[in-house]
Length: 455
Ligand code: TYD
Ligand code: MG
Image 1 (cartoon, protein in one colour):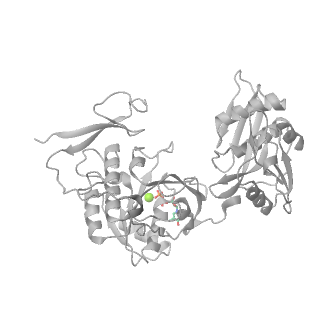
Image 2 (image 1 turned 45 degrees about the vertical axis):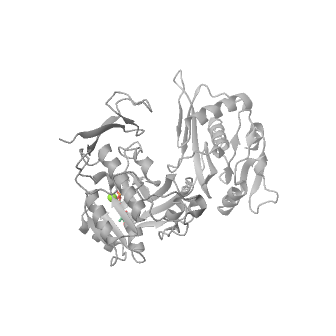
Image 3 (image 1 turned 120 degrees about the vertical axis):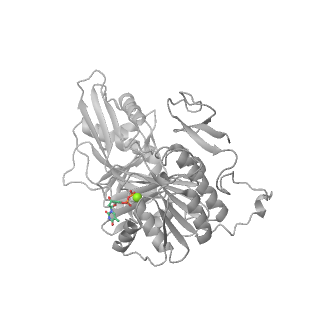
């Protein structure tokens, strides 16, 4: 009898272990190992050209400049927001993972993309989740061109690759990777083993046949791709489509990209007619009521190559607890603690008996340090119960000695704020424009005390 090979793989980091153990050797997480049956070493069922490693017997060594670059022109997906996130279009032969919670719009987006692309190239849409009728109904309702897109309802990866080899599509969608399975892997679809092996198999298929493959992946509640972090190792590009189902807007960000930058943000709106691009998203998260209240301020953050105006709110309230709460939503918790210390030491404001809550409105996540000054001023505004002007925008990094440091793209941020009707800006001295900007008065500050005086 052929011996069944198995490995134990960590769900969190993807490290391999020869036997089961309670803790992962690599990331030290507990209870994350699952068995991965690799099938028998001999007599495996399918001819499996894609089950080995990417190399083959006729591989040859070349120098870098001999490699033919003409094969690598990207093609546009028809959606500039998607192209932007992918780093300028789809690279032939690449494997792209689109993650997102159920209802985010992954299937809708890919259906729209594939229907458009099928007009110019051979495109194959494989669905394992929805029936062909469901997909067809949706395409009809969205008024998409349906005459050229090839559809396949199948969940066996080997079968899909055999069919795709005959059809020779230039682009292919697998919806979703969690329902795909391989005969050689002896565990249920959706398990780490199946997902990992299926994705690796499809990726090799993509490379060897020069087909761009989009794989849909579901995301668990805590935002990680269901089961396998392991997936991220083998694919070229991992994109997350994010968004509350009760909000219209969906944001798209890449977490790994072999062919471009990862800091770009794409914005879509879910409408009655499918997903529409939002070409100028700078102010979409800015929907403020009539009245301005203490603790609220608008800041300009930088997303990839574009500015974004978002509102930041802080609430400072007398604490009943010995250990007051510090809660930051959409911001870094550590940054909040640090800014409170700076405020105490260099601004003379003590909040050690106060609860502090900070929130970025609209569910935006801010990782930039340019939010420091805005957060600081919002906290002071709430603490003193002093409303900041409605037409004020703020950005700047705060250093540990209370200095206000410049941030990148200062001028573009100010121009964007002016365009949306803001008339005052508090910015770091290093970001002060040489020529005045029409319609906006710029207050340049270099120390925390200057900024506190300016409000
Ligand atoms: P879907 O693409 O099926 O999500 P996913 O594949 O990521 O799970 O999107 C489903 C959601 O989108 C569903 O909640 C309804 C909404 N929707 C619209 O609002 N308008 C539309 O035109 C379509 C097709 C879907
Ligand atoms: Mg779907």
